[in-house]
Length: 166
Picture 1 (cartoon, helix red, strand yellow):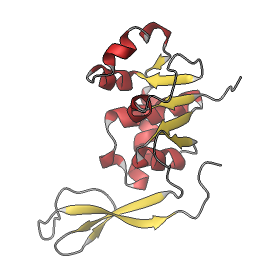
Picture 2 (cartoon, helix red, strand yellow):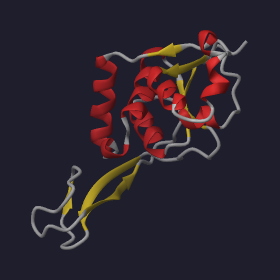
Picture 3 (cartoon, rainbow, N blue to C red):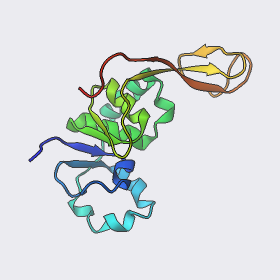
């Protein structure tokens, strides 16, 4: 039996490629809350007592937020996305997701990840932010440029040369 632990995000559950009652699957509590809002909730309600549902600790969430800030992905991650990565940190699991920001932050933290339906990213991305008006660049996310007032957009600063998912 494969002892690797897989932490599923919402896209992985929606892919319906997993038997959710497998012992090596972990689902963050916030993912279950997202699922309860959708159509798949009826399918999960009868299985819920057999699911391995985790809530991450504050320390893990803080580590994920710090890593996401370093990569420039913090503004793109929802609280649920952060929980997925934080649970994977705590249980030493592989993240299963189709969210590239989750994959990027997972890579920064040295976590393995797999795509649920899509091919995962192959290189870590470092983001920066650029004003759509004056072109000024910023290292952290701003809603609008303090120089000219235009929107600030996220752009690639560089790609990591290291191989992903070793």
